[in-house]
Length: 101
Ligand SMILES: [Zn+2]
Image 1 (cartoon, rainbow, N blue to C red):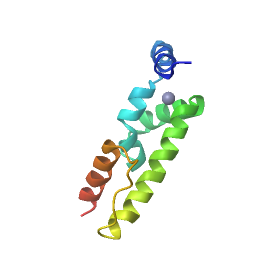
Image 2 (cartoon, helix red, strand yellow):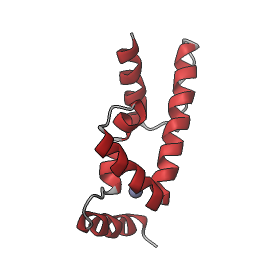
Image 3 (cartoon, helix red, strand yellow):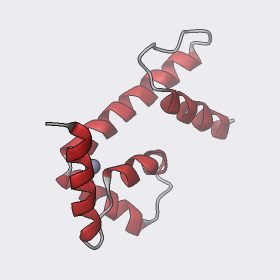
Image 4 (cartoon, rainbow, N blue to C red):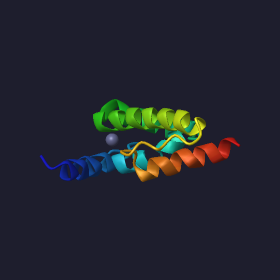
């Protein structure tokens, strides 16, 4: 089945339910979620979404792995960024590192 259509259908369904976010919204705020910058209410909304959405559980897991990988790669200095790392994740890692300094 077309993944994009499944995702749109799921988004429409989630939007109709109060207190739920869509996968797109989840992805938009994943950096804040990961850094613990969400309010308690937002975080709860995220946790509910994670419980019902296998896709986002996988996405969060991949995100966490990539951040961990990215941090260790960057702390080794000139280690190359993995080729399959999406640009937005590289940007997120760089932003996270900038905040740490
Ligand atoms: Zn989702």
